Amino acid sequence: MKNTIFSPLKLIVSIILLTGTYANGESASVLNAKADEAIQKFTQKVQGGAKFLSKVKGYLVFPSVVKGGFVVGGEYGEGVLRINGQTKHYYSIASGSIGLQAGLQKTSYVIAFVSQSALENFIKSDGWEAGVDGSITVVDLGLGKDIGSISFEKPIYVFVFDAKGLMYNLTIEGTKFTRITPK
Image 1: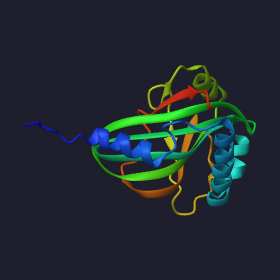
Image 2 (image 1 turned 180 degrees about the vertical axis):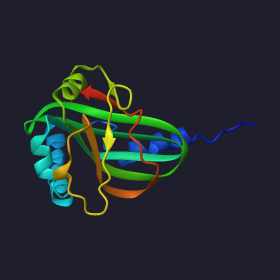
Image 3 (image 1 turned 90 degrees about the horizontal axis):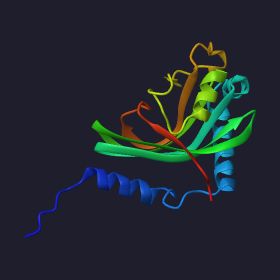
Image 4 (image 1 turned 135 degrees about the horizontal axis):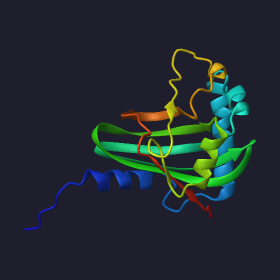
């Protein structure tokens, strides 16, 4: 008699691969078009978003990050790094976790580099890990805050927006960013 053990990690990885287009990756033109759309949503939904992005040294746009988990979880997405509004590089975002979590969610991230040194360290790194290689601040977009007045005290700000689905657990610590070459 064969003993099969339920593997939450296998389930989560399967769901992420099946619900996204990430099994084959996106082309550069598709990633850029999706990033443009995500930035448009960001600046429409987030008061002061356009003003804020015009002041930063560069920003990563992940238009679609799929996150899922039940005790064991993971997330994956692909995006672009923009400097002066122009795409310079392409990146993937990936993480795995164990702990109190449940659900499946698709969301968008904008990660803004306020300081030139934080941006340069990110670009030079070979697989940057949030919380290890850089100090980040996750911005709470609740209560109609205007982010145009952020004081630029921290080197990196993360904005999570356009969430669809339900996921109990929001953290970006331990998330790995890797430069990729799109199709």
